[in-house]
Length: 225
Length: 128
Figure 1: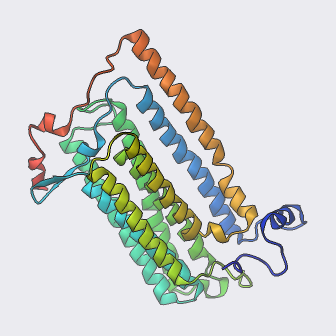
Figure 2: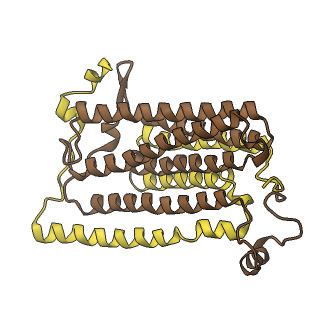
């Protein structure tokens, strides 16, 4: 497993770190697109963390009671109110899509065009269904529960603004990811990466896993805590 | 590009991590389902959250297999965010305290739940 990114004859670990930075050569031993994707993802981490920290701050400072999130997001199925059931389904869908994306990357490096293409399509379809469920959730919150960015009947008005901003921004990332995956999948199908190499599938995968990663935090802070 | 080996790993590890993520999500959901409250709830939810985040980044995003130069570029800058979170927690607690102290806001207010507003349960949602 350790053979991967190492170039023949370059040291690993701290020694490798020093050599990568000190030698008169490019620092990151990865395709430039991958390095740029990582830099983009690190900056996106900052954006999402700033949003979540804003959420932390308004929730701490408001003296209005914070709405009971687990009750608001409950859904009635088969005549029974089940807490967070839609969110649980959305979470499982996103994890499933992350798994199928990881497999797509793997089959890409195995140069299995068919499997890579279909796994990416499955990932995109799961992503699209996630966005669909989010639209359903928002509709329920806005129409049935009367939650608005400027107020709601349950407690602190800030709940609506942070909730819609953060989940909306995440939803936009998922939507963008679905489009991105479909474009790359189509290029895989056409065989554009046969000569160029399948790193681009991995780069698209990085973005998709990041979207899943952000959801892990949203799931914890908006729904469970 | 084609001279590079890329991130090529056995499929087994992806399946294992995939299942693990499902299990951890199941645990997080169980915390809510069984109404674990208070400090233990926070502890469990945040532990499962970081475990999931760690496995996604390490295995699915291949960070454990990258060279240290890239790993540190990814992991070191977000440390600044921990300071931001820490400072904002202290600041937020202080702001809240002054609001109770000087504006006389009522600290015992409770939020309303959907059943208070719709009147008894959520049965009207069955229409969906």
